[in-house]
Image (cartoon, rainbow, N blue to C red; front, side, top):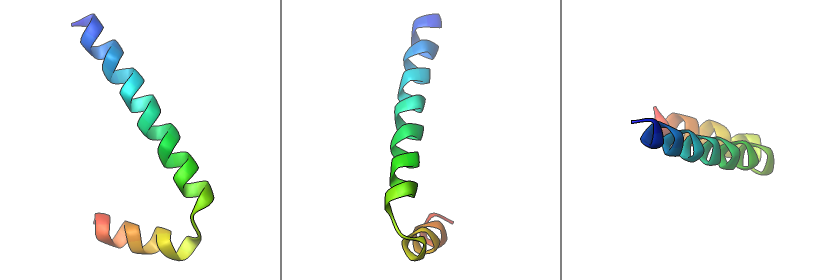
Amino acid sequence: MLKISNKHDKITKVVLTNLMIFLIITPPKIHIFSFLVGV
């Protein structure tokens, strides 16, 4: 159980890091579009 949650934490951190990089790189118009598509 502990190993699984630990692995999950690592995956979550990687995803969040990629998301932060994506948010920094992409212009605001794409953010709004991707947000609307996501919702």
